[in-house]
Image 1: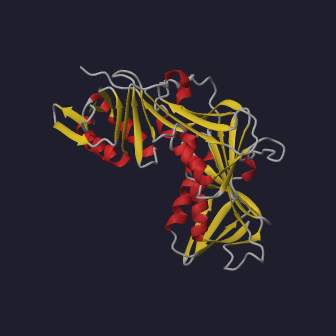
Image 2: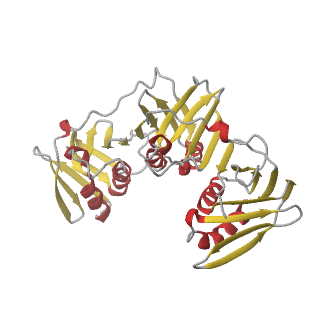
Image 3: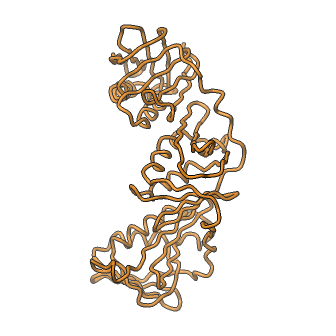
Length: 383
């Protein structure tokens, strides 16, 4: 194998697949990145027990080559190089171009400017077979990249961090009546986002993807590029023009969360997202010293919303937040400030509705007059 490639282009591709490599795996071949150079371009692949990532640097056609070609394949071939050292070496080189030549014993000579590095590689035939899928003859969903990114960002933060209930460390994907729904919960809060799907996709339910895997998928998605998604019995696959992502599915049954979402509210408040977020963020300075990060909220008709946090070791903060709209009863709730801040950041509207049913009942945050996104939080019991 012998290639010449633009260093920045190569560095981007290496960093993308490096996210899928586990340096602590007991299987030596999986600590490396697989490189395949052929007549179509250069393919890089990384894999661990949860996800695999493939990215491709294609060869341009003469009609496309308006600028200097970023990749030249002088001699096809393949090799597995240690991910950690490859990523660090490429990042620290300072030449615009680099050449990689692989010998018969899988030693790679990397040359850039006046620097020459010899890196011991591994036999690529020992690398596990790359995942294959018949995209033409199986149902799939095509979403704009920015929409898919938003769907994940508005839900994935609510997954459980503890492995006590492994199923809750994932996001549940479901399709019903032409609407795609993502749900995440850790049993103390819940995030649910729905969006209509224009194409005819068969309904499905209980496709549960690890939150950690979705966070890695987020790093691959760029802007408006279309992303095609498909599901197998034990995997999710997502692909764009120059990358392919696969992740295992979590096994088990996701809890029925519809029963804990209140269907009505005794108190409805319309308030500025930014102003409420900033007030809670200031109170969080005191709340983070307390178990469960407790901040209290008091709401009365004709009065501003009052935020308070009290830490015996630090002190107390009280802040009034103007209300844009109010209906129903006075209300007093206490909540985990971190959960509230993350929920508000996930709502991309200027104003939010706060729907309260009681001091110890779940309350809802959502964009004004829009139930396609629901952020639900369980209050904290206080003395």
